[in-house]
Amino acid sequence: MAFDIMRLFEDDEYVSPGSIGGKIKKYRELRGWSQKELGLRCGFSASTADVRIAQYEKNKKIPREKALKDIAAALEIDECSLYDADMLPYNRMYHALFDMEDFHGLHPVKKEDGYYLEFSGPTVLDQNIIKNDFRAFLEKWYEMRQKYQPNSSDTPEEKAAKAKEYAIWRGEYPHNVAKETSERMRDAMREHRLQAELDELYAKRNSEAELNRIEKALEGVMSEVRAEYTPIQRESDLIYLIKDSLEKGLPLERFSPEERTEIDYDYIHLFSIKSEEITRNNENKRLYACLVCAIETLQQNRINITRSVTSKDKELFVTYKYPSSQYRYFDTLQHCWEDITYIIERKPYWSKEELDDLDDKFRAKVTGEKDISFAENDDNGD
Image (cartoon, rainbow, N blue to C red; front, top):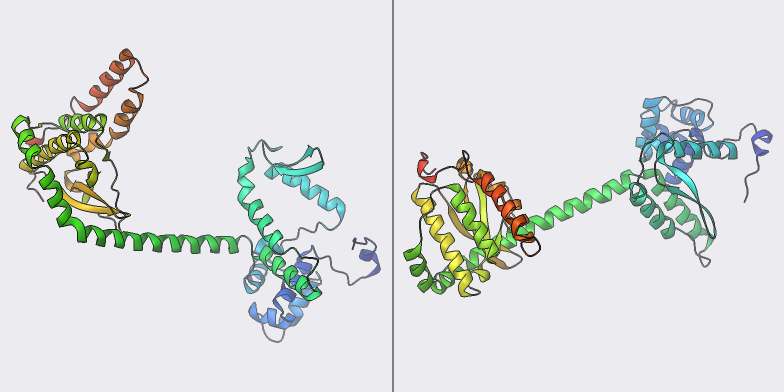
C-alpha cells in the first residue's frame, strides 16, 4: 500500500518508521519485548525503563550515543541500523541517493528494459570505487531477500514470519555475516589441524618402509654417483645443483608439502620431493643421488641437515630441513627460487642471447661476496 504523506499532518502521534524512534520500536516488536523489558535490558532503572523507551520511540527524546549503543546491544543489532536516516519522504530519499553517489559511487545506468542503480567508480569526490567492492554485500542481500520472499501459497502467518526474519537479518547485518565468516574460519582451521594430524600419522606409519624402498632402488646408482661426485664447497654450488635438477625435470618442492599443527621455529624447509618421483626413472634416481651427496657434504661441514618422510593427502615426500640458526648458509638460495623458476619457464621461448643474459644476471646474484663457503662453518652442529 502506498504511503500517504498526509498522515504526517493528520496524526500528531505519528512516528516515521525511518526515524530513530520508529526503528527502535520496529526491532523491539520484532524481538517480542515490551518497552519496559527493553529498558531493563538496556540497564535503565525499573521505575523509568518503560518511560525512557516510550520517549525514544516517539522521538520526544533522542538517545545520546551511549544510550543508542546500549539499545542496539540489547536488541542484538548493529547500531548503524538505528541511525536517523528517514527516507520515507521522497525528497529525503532522493538526496540520500545523491549522498551515496558522492561517497560510494552509486549512480543510475540505462539498460534496454529500464533504469537501474549500480555501485562503480569513480565517485563525485574522485574516490575510485570498483564494482566488486560491493559484490559480497549485494550477493548476500540478494540471497537473503530471495530466501524470505513470500510465496503465493504462503499463509498470512508464514508471510509475517518471513518478513520478521528478513527485518531481523537486516538489523543484525553485518555482524551476522561476520559471525558466519568467523565460524567458517574456525571450521577450516579445525579441518586443517585434523588433516595435519592425519598426514603426520600416515607419514609415521609409512616412513621406514618408504625409506627402505628408496634406498633399495638407489643401490647401484648411489655408488656410481659417489664415484663421480665432486663435493660442493659454496652456497652457489648448491644453488646450481638444485637449478640443474629442476631444469632436468626433478620436481623439487620449494615449500614444505606437509600441513603442521604447530609452527616449527627451530628448522627451516630446504626442499622436498615426492618419493615416487625419486624412483620414477634412472635420470631422476641420478639427480636425487647427486643431491644426497651434496647433503652429506653439508653434514660433514657440521651443517645439521635433517631428513624425514612427510605426507600430504596420503602422498609421501622426502623432506630436508636445516636449523634456523644456520640460515645464513641458505639465505641466497631462498631468494633465488623464483629466479630459477623464471629462467626455466622462459627457456623454450627465449633466444640464446636472451637466455645467456639472464644466466649472467643470475650468476652475478648468487656469486660474489655473499657466496658463503660451507667449510667456514664454525657452528657446533646445534
